[in-house]
Image (cartoon, rainbow, N blue to C red; front, top):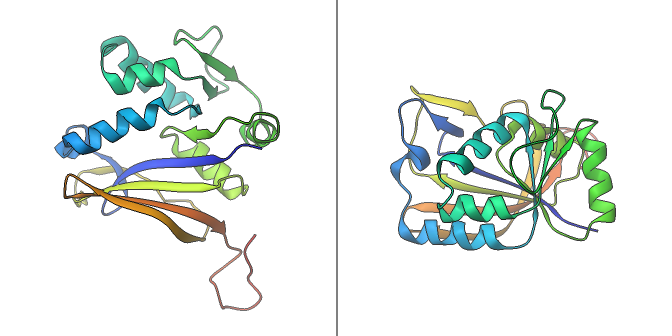
Length: 196
């Protein structure tokens, strides 16, 4: 049985991007970029939705020599979409048009390779709500983008307890936090709410 990791980069106030800011909020440093490249080369299956697929496959065309993009291009990828049509142009990519939660549940049972989401906010939310996520990893960038932030990562999520299992700092400013998530039926200690 494989493990599934949801993986995000966020501003301190929980946004995935901000209008007018460069990628990584302009704060990517050499230590973090080396870690991204090394992490992308670890064997896993990348899971994504249609919006992320369109964005990332565009990067693959525009930046084919970027080490992180090249590593992702080489990985097996599964895209969950009812709007994309086969064949997909990005190599090593399988299109799944059915229920993503059931497809991932089946993948976890039959495929020993680790699974990881790439962006894909609604897909990640659905997988977490279904109790399929084994690890939840975020890299927090030291910016607050209240005025320009877009794509609030955690809106619509259920209540979740997070047990910290790993962490580190990159370039003296970016904080990686890795958790084991437990979806809760409600706030802990209130009534009979227990982990799902």
